[in-house]
Image (cartoon, helix red, strand yellow):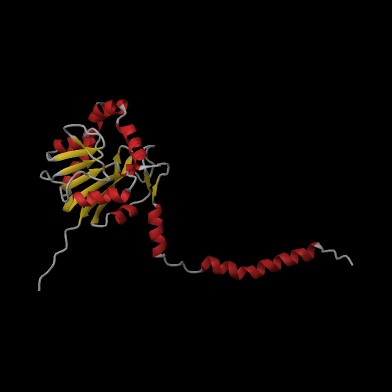
Length: 250
């Protein structure tokens, strides 16, 4: 026998199904918020720092960085138009750090990834005269040759280190590890990074929050985070290296 379903019957079934689902809907909407899982938070912070793919070897990575550093047109811009434009801005940044007692005129300072030494010149103009830059390609007398993954300096050398090339680090943990190795106890490191926009095509990593930096600086404490306008970089993050532990004799 053929059964024909009428429209009223179908409508009654539909209304009954909605009625039965109401308790589950209210339970979902009004249940208390679950506490934040610290494990999930840790995983999220790691996702906030990603390494860009495409490097078959460390040599290939270095060569790509050199393609930018040795570009004759860029070097001419860095030593002419950018020289006059950027040095006063860097000098202002560093002067503000002096007022916060994060930098002194007596500080021994290093600028990491300094290219032609604009940052070094800015430091010297505000009387931080014991300053030097480091880059893959030297630019005497302001910049010496060195790889920021393996700095050519001894332990506890500098009172202050500055860099705006964290995004170029293929191994961020080595980049930070070398800073902490070469900083003196209580020394200060200041980084300018981009959080709200992606860096250029030569960057090796992308940073989305400050949390990965806090995790990387294992032997330092966070001093401050502030917004800056640093030629495409929007955030300044400052760390102070912890002093060595004191051992009390009994």
